[in-house]
Length: 239
Image 1 (cartoon, rainbow, N blue to C red):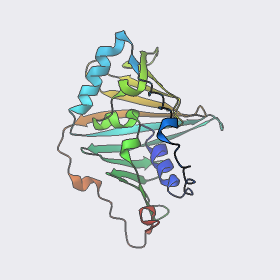
Image 2 (cartoon, one colour; image 1 turned 180 degrees about the vertical axis):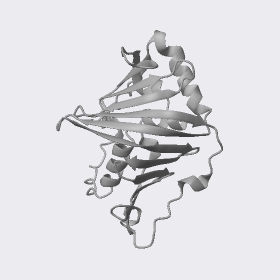
Image 3 (cartoon, rainbow, N blue to C red; image 1 turned 180 degrees about the horizontal axis):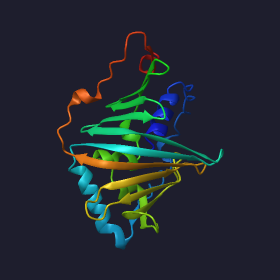
Image 4 (tube, one colour; image 1 turned 60 degrees about the horizontal axis):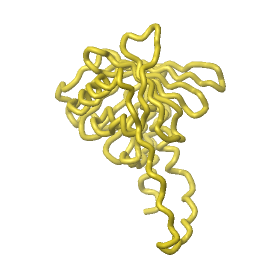
């Protein structure tokens, strides 16, 4: 659900130095069992809505929507607003086409993520392990189950058009502090998603005029940058 922030951070991570070698494991008798991962929970008053929302995305083969993104930087006390369209197709194809304030394209295709900036005439390619993504992202793909990772309660919101769900990680997550989903109580579609970053910044994406199962072609996720585009392919590092 971080979308632009998520994809950029994934690409940036490709240039990070390799982690130091792990120490040799202790003999089997001395190795303690790791603590069991904390499981999430769902408040009774929103249990049915959460299940309907989960089912909606599990049954969705593709979708297309306009979006409005407001990123509130807590440190700088300013908000950056972006607009564009998002397209998704199972399994694991997603394209974010930013139109304003400047054209940019982000494509998630299987184990690769692409970031194209026509203004800078650059295309960046990186690896991404979708198995490590949070359910707050993968449930849109019809995969991750929110109730497995979050404690979900009903929030209060004076100007919400739907029901506000507040998702607190069942165990600490360095990627975010909290996720809030505004859900249409009739259709169970997510109208708006807000991710609270560790520093308190807020990344809010409102989905506009969502259309599902419209028969989107795989060709919609191809990138064909013009001649002269600089390509930084981090997937080839170390080969």
